[in-house]
Length: 173
Image (cartoon, rainbow, N blue to C red; front, side, top):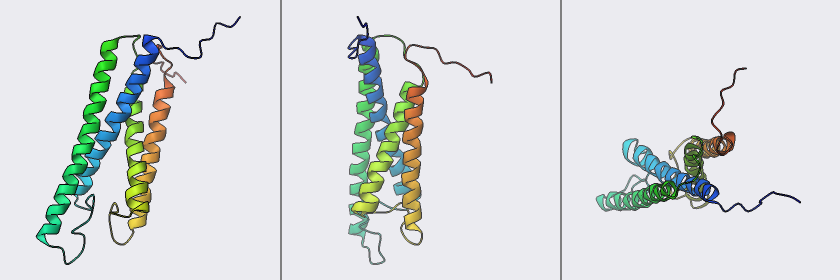
């Protein structure tokens, strides 16, 4: 008779899943905020919707950029807050201590998902903006996707790297 429990719904399993969801939400939101702050505001390479990304742009076009970027930031901040809230609830629920890699792994995976979804939809399908418009824009867009894929792979590796409930082991070899 098998003692395997394929659907473990104990507190520890629910906590682990909740922390992973929290990390992904947080990572998506933080990735969006980093994108908005770095590319939209500091570098000013693009905006969510490039109303003013042409030589004849008016002050009204710039204002529309600011509003669109602001709405983008509100959504990114909302995802970040949702992730923190989910993490708070998961940790209050208790359960076994989680390996330290689960939350950062889930956050990296979430940031990777943000880059992949935003990059494919906005840069390639809708073409409402590019990472850096102009000569070489395809290279910048593909690098953005590659960075997202790398973050996702790293995040998944981190989450799988530490068995549940086990202390991290250092390699001696």
